[in-house]
Image (cartoon, rainbow, N blue to C red; front, side, top):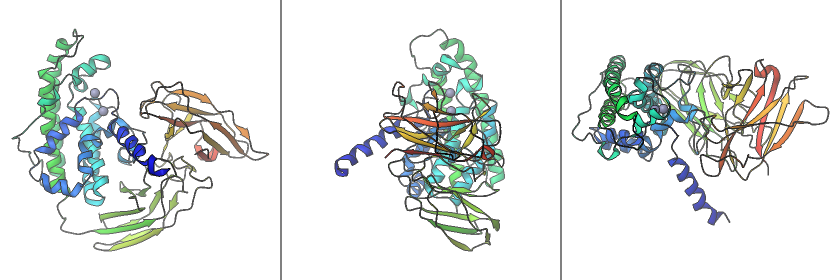
Length: 462
Ligand SMILES: [Zn+2]
Ligand SMILES: [Zn+2]
């Protein structure tokens, strides 16, 4: 009865897109909308981005708070981690400043080399950090309840900068980056001064009362966002004098059956260039520099593939065809399940992290598990290398708050080094997103993963 199920699936996808991460600068969406509305060439950009235009404000400007999450149609970390920014950093000052230059350059790169969808997502990541950097409590290091009071008590309806003329922050990439950083220094001073006055005003209040000082900051953040977007789109979407090289690729990728419609990711080893496949499994890089590059394809449910090195020259179009091999376990949901790719960091496989709660464990990328699905976990260890494995269920994919750990009772498959277990979502947890929990496996070892383990698989039970 797929006919009757479809509207439900669409409704669920829409509902999950509207879910916002907890504890965030309330008006990201309204600030972004206010900025987009005043862009001089708005119609041109809107046409370019198509259906992703609306998602910049509704969804992508929250990207920074979705770290580690697998969303209904993308992995957030594909737009948050790259070789020039290999770790998540705090969104508070002074740490948040470390995001400015790398994300500014990466967003420009995305506008020039990737699809409108990918560009919109990278721009969203940068917007998030910029907007957090101007949020009052972020400027003076305030956490807890007071943090929320100091950034969410804004009358969103007044978030309007009509009449503001966005400034071009520089005519070249270098000038624009310097102009952007100077604008951010100004924003920090602007918000910090107001945060200092705001703190004693809201501290004793129990009930929400909208604060003019917070609105002041939010309006300035909107003006900075408008300057930034105007600059990025003007520099990034204007034809470059030299066309550069193009790689056009085709793969047999399709997302695992019954799973989120996550794309495959293509990276050029040793560079910040990456992109993702469209719904047909195709991808394209435009405006690449000349040189030799080695593309890799990271595709959930398939073996990670290293493609042949390509030599690029200006104006040349290279056509690639990548026939990905199915993972030996059909529809395996573990990313980089054999640890083949180490692009973000050269010494740690992509999609794997040292567990922040216990550094002698490795954590997989999180997997979306509908509450009514069980998962078959299979671990192929190196000979004599079996170590404990723990399943951790998260309610919020981007937070360990409220998560629960369950040691896996792994059973050996005959005399092999293969161990298996079946687990089901912990239904006592309250999902953050309706009907879904997020699973990761934690592998307990101080050794590098490939030394201990050969292959990790998690698949929905049929
Ligand atoms: Zn905040
Ligand atoms: Zn944030």
